[in-house]
Length: 175
Image 1 (cartoon, rainbow, N blue to C red):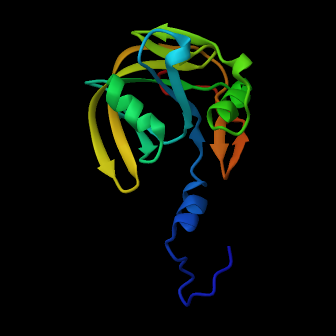
Image 2 (cartoon, rainbow, N blue to C red):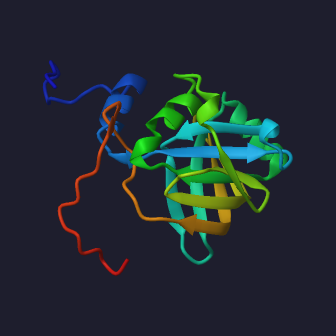
């Protein structure tokens, strides 16, 4: 990127933050919650602001925009699910991001009264341990109550586009 400032520094604005942090490759998740174990009560959204916090106790964190309906829903239910998507689930990511309307693709698996997406690489059923305001987002730390995972290729997001993951080595570090 070319820049006209004397030191080559870029002004820290929301747009420049998005451009800079978009260069951090992330997996793609769908965060879900429901008031009852009924598909009609499910609310979900695509999120890549997700991270592991602790192994013992098992904690994960999601960051949700304050204006998102998901914050109110998570506060009401006290639980949420995280489905880490596989490469072939890009259409589901677009559906839950509101970029494409494809409800016929959506199939849920229920774990601990939490809806998770069928076919995802990972399912995490979480109860809210704590929530913290952080700028224009709310951080929800969830205790993982149940998990499930499978092998496959993850859906990756980088610089505003979905990507595939190329393995440079096939000898994982003890996994």
